[in-house]
Length: 153
Image (cartoon, rainbow, N blue to C red):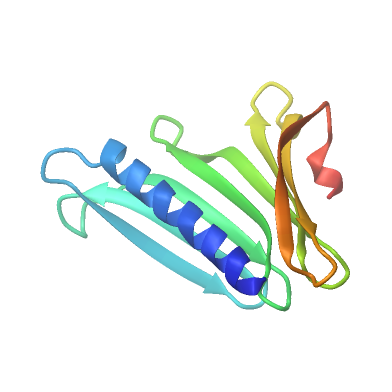
């Protein structure tokens, strides 16, 4: 099961980096990433920048992954750089819930609402279903919850 979760996360990150790499890289620019691990807060912050060398970098995106004590993801928030305001702007959030046995139960997805300055609104989620031998049997399709406050998670 841990392998399935790890593969899912690795696949998601790989697809994201490939898609952002193609859209962010310009001309001779290269993409650079900086990873900061904070063991006290149990977070991994990855910042992706663009530039022709490692001295004159332009920030693009930042991803903050918060893990539980066992290293399982609890929350992943993505930000984009607002060059005009010179600050990170929240974009999307994934929240992970687990069954008592540690198996992934649900992944929630939401986008930052600029108007209300909060997460929520139209939440999408996927539910993981396990059989009697704790084998993953299916993932129920993306569903929506309207006006759901994800901050309660």
